[in-house]
Image: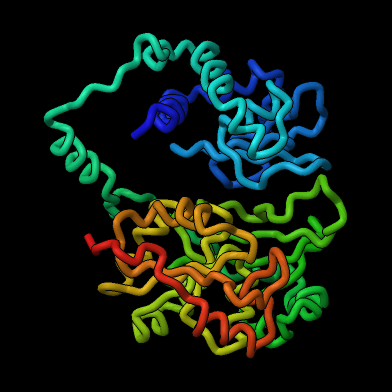
Length: 360
């Protein structure tokens, strides 16, 4: 592992994200807007408390809400490059990578990573340490605290029956009704009940109706829950997954509803742009040698897909839908297509991510 990743892990494990952001002139947002494990802050001199977002994991991925173009995916080095060295392209991030690294090392006093003192030495016991590390990272579900369940009566707080905007987007009324989609009058958001594997409600997400408002988060919790340990639609999809020994994984909940409409019912959503370790482990344990198909929006590169699915580890049966035939417009999900195109993408554009990888 290179020292760039080791530095990120050091920041994460020692909870140094806040002092780093403050050193860059960001003001930390102390109010929680989301159930994501992340830190939010203003940009230097800015007044939007949610402008800068750093996701708390060993990858330290970041987002910045700005009217100007920025790469949609950046880590903490890219964020430093943008805020400190005023670079706003991937090329600029690469050019200033060494400067960003030095800034982080100096600011956080990570002297062990200085070029003069940090030298890689071959460890004859590295193989043994790697085995121990893997064992340590294996998830024991008995140690994972489940989300508290909520009574079905909370659905009475919402105007059920779906929303016209989702009908116009290709999700008919009967499908929205089946999934208890509604509207929360108080927050002016579409309400999406989240259920655990047993079908019990554990939370409710709200999707904005104000698409034109840049200061509005697309999704916010109405009833908060730990998203990292749930998969949307698993309770309904499970028998179909086990029958086919295959699962289709989407980023967004809406894609599950669209796939359901087309009769593809072995699908779940990770409910965001990142797959968590627990979600990945849940999927792998659904049935032996399950075929996992990730179906992400057009425009996401193969390299980015590989980064996102790295959480599955050395897993053999891992596939991705990749639009080689150019059937989709930019940023479209395969589920956004008409049924003929959707079926063609599933059947013809599903590629093994690691063709030569052997199963664990």
